[in-house]
Length: 324
Ligand code: NAD
Ligand code: AKB
Image 1 (cartoon, rainbow, N blue to C red):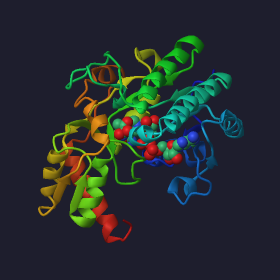
Image 2: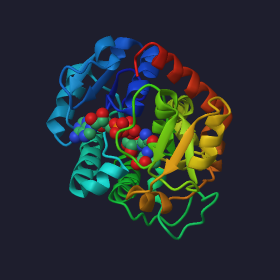
Image 3: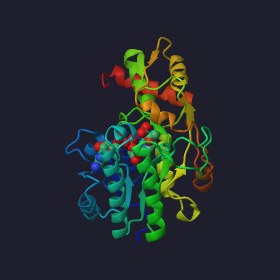
Image 4: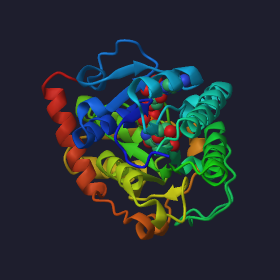
């Protein structure tokens, strides 16, 4: 069994998190040591221009096998997935990519004795019937979305591979991730990213969730820090493996709009909830992340006000430069 992180493969690397995780990993481990992969051939995306990039469909285990051998991979950050909103529109696609993709990655992890496999989970593991606030690490997992079903099964599968095959597999339950680099790929928390783009471009946003929908969120720099910190944590210190709660901030669309108005006083918002409201209503508002704090010193840096200020600065600069 390899132990060190030296040669990394990132699946789903063209997505919202992948584009920024690949850059952070390349800064840390060296450009040539981080292989980005996704479905699209010849993408214009920075991660594919700056360093190694492979076309890799996670539902095809031969694609994964070929890439592990080609680059002598020892660590996989498995980000390829179908998120909640797209998953509700196409549940079979969601099941196929999230479940078959994950078991293919885990099987290759065992076969090639990888040092580590990191598989993100989500607040989507919860459904109705858990407390709305400070959901504990150990809690009932009864999601009502197909995405949530695959995330619960994915966590259980990863823990099974830890116990059955001794594979070092780790995962964390991200809240909604907010970022200014790549747009999100079809989730329920996407409103908290779209609102910033629309505020900067049009001073107006038509929100697909109700004004009082409270959800846990996290700014991308904290998401990247959490992911790399967990990947690098000492295995012996971990009592949990694939299901760490990680929290940062909680707000509603109305609270976020009020925060944006501190910089853009004329910003206006309307609320026209669609099918995503039902998914959001099934998720908790805040979570207890004391296990992550205790086991690998998790501690977020951003809050609502610092995140909003940073997002508006970054997107205003992009807008002025004609990039958005
Ligand atoms: P995203 O939708 O932005 O990106 C996913 C990427 O996976 C896309 O680039 C897509 O092309 C790729 N992909 C889809 N099917 C594939 C396949 N068969 N083979 C290879 N690639 C495929 O997602 P993200 O936001 O970057 O999410 C990354 C991980 O984090 C996922 O596991 C997701 O469930 C989890 N997560 C994300 C958030 C969030 O708010 N972004 C929150 C909680 C959990
Ligand atoms: C989604 O909304 O589907 C994701 C998530 C919270 O997992 N952002």
